[in-house]
Image (cartoon, rainbow, N blue to C red; front, side):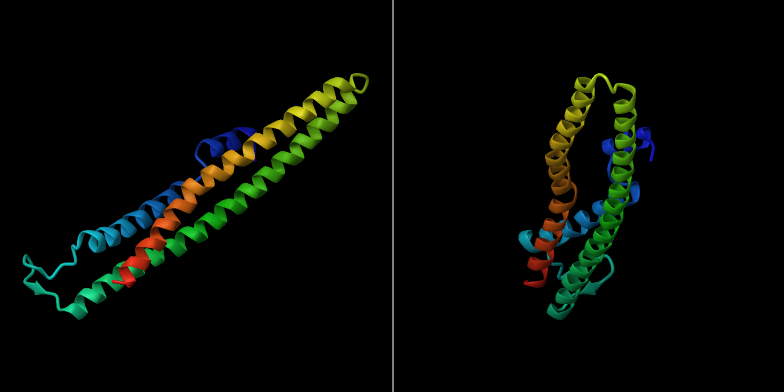
Length: 158
């Protein structure tokens, strides 16, 4: 992966498809939460002349939980794929950096201070990047999954 493509992925780490699945996951979770917490379990849909018995209401809630579960599993699969692609890209970047480091060592063999300075900068960037990556991973993956699990729990426990 080129440096330009890696920079683009750093700006927007999830593909459009994964973002759409996350959006759908959050929407289905939100519907379940609103129905339970606000008490919007429909008793009828007058436009269609449909009356919901208690069993039908439970089936509707199970359907909402099933849809949320489907999107949660789909999102997990997409995230696993994205993280694998990220891991491959970062390893390729590390190899490129090591090769550049090796070239600099050969080129500036007499000036080891410059080579050591470069190595410290790369190490410092790695230390800074990890907490940022983990925070973003929590916000982009952990929160949506947590909300969806909570939604499924309260919908199925109704």
